[in-house]
Image (cartoon, rainbow, N blue to C red; front, side):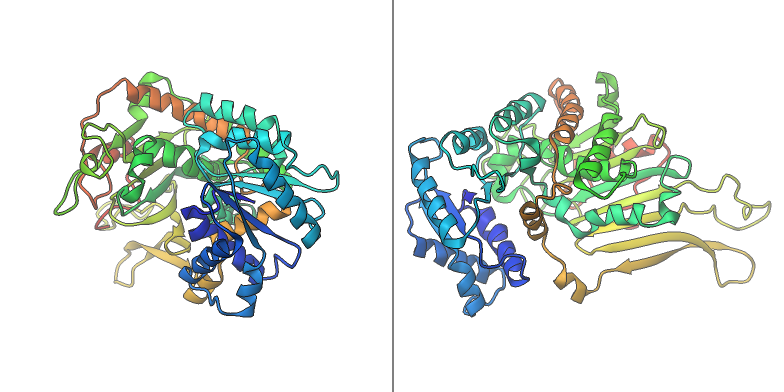
Length: 486
């Protein structure tokens, strides 16, 4: 059941993803989909909208397969704040349960404003929409944002916990559904060569970059109340970093993986005021040509101090990572749209090729790059001898990129995650302890920034952010692996 079933996310992502699962046989005949919203609409009009969403995503909708799939969709107008409305929804769910032999299994997907999450969760239980069949499951799927700070997130989690157990709550972070983010675990724990070097003895630093080419577009009203720190760092980046920093789990199960991610986040150093001010920088894009600066975008206040860029240094106080920084950055209106992780290994303690009178350039660092999007793959930078006379070295790259045909077959993030919800697999979802530790870290940065008046705008569109982001890493005698014109 989708609360917010007529929304943009449902049409663009959720319904096409469900259809992909249906085509591949992961959904059979025993399922029904109920969409709700305040709009007055009958089943046929709703099905026509679902059909259009499939067509807009490139599917052939005149086929029997598509027709059969769409026939499983039903609509019920619903005011989530009106307790009496839940009785009508319950009646529909009970009828569909019998018609499709669902055995009481129910998934509730909340794709709407987060201020309603607690109310809906409470009424699902008190009004009897949750199945009371002891052999059936009830699962709650939550879209971000999960709070806007630790206190509001805890308040929300407490509200949800009155109706649902932790293992019934699936907090979606679509980055965890991306192919190469899930490949981090395979890369690390499936390769002795990699995992044996995955520590502070051999790794100098790790860099995570989530770069967006566009500005705020139609999300300005939401974004100005969020900013890059809350919108990207607290969830997407912290989840990626936890996968990079975690210890090997006992087994590849959601319980064991989550436990190790929590341990990693527990060891993340929460900065004091001085360190927070030093180790995190922010930015807001200016104007260029016909592109207005952030403060002159539609629905943005002219004096907004909301950041559209964040860069920072994270430190883990544990045996594996002590002394090895994790640098992160994300922003809007940057040079290009991409996500990548760069693992920078330490250089040899002694460069034997830099003997006196040699013309050899210093050895470059070995770098393992994980390309997440738009292209998926790996790159490993090594040092090798040039083909010239004498003895010179140069960096070379061993690349693997997923080809176009394989890319077409790769499931979309929401397709993966919806499938995981159906299986009850919480591996690629954020647990409450993960969310809480991430908020405690981010809240300290936010508190420090709220005490300062930023000098915005401070970076040019289509750059890689403000000069302060370069200074942040150069202060440690390091550099970003991805730089413009490099």
